[in-house]
Image (cartoon, rainbow, N blue to C red; front, side, top):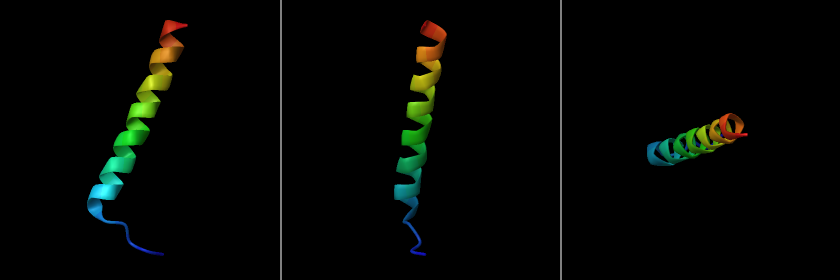
Length: 30
């Protein structure tokens, strides 16, 4: 397995958090 650079991991986790919060927002709105 190739070790990903730190910044890439950060970016991915940030993206996941963003999409998660978007989902939660949609849930609370509807």
